[in-house]
Image 1 (cartoon, rainbow, N blue to C red):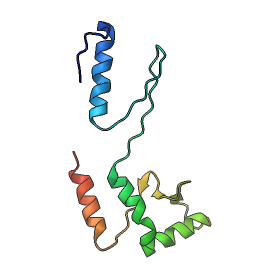
Image 2: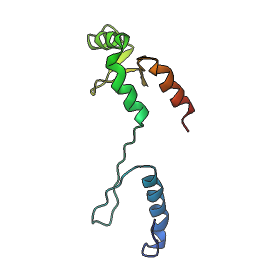
Image 3: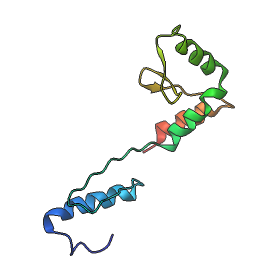
Image 4: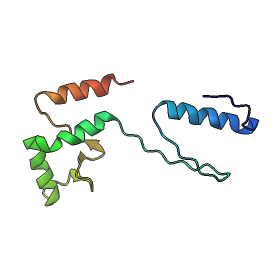
Amino acid sequence: MGSLAHIAPTKRLLAKDIQRLEDTGIEFNVGNSEALLACAQAESSLVERIKATQYEDERLCKYIDEALVGKNKDMIVESDGVLRMGDRLCVADIDGSRHAILEESHNYK
């Protein structure tokens, strides 16, 4: 981050907070107006890996089919096709990947 000398003292804390967020990979787009409006959505690569493998697991495919026809009320297929049980993602077990994914998620800091 460069010098904050050109930023009003009352806005420096906000500028530092924005820089910290950008350092974590969140991107901001600031228009030419006086106001700052930012919307960020962050999703870990772990979640993307889980979503990508759900349709490779026969058991999860069965649950997806059941949820879509209303046979399984505990399972939800979201608009993007992702299977959840309540608010939890269902993790596929392809070539032992479930263990690796769960271990990574539990050890993530």
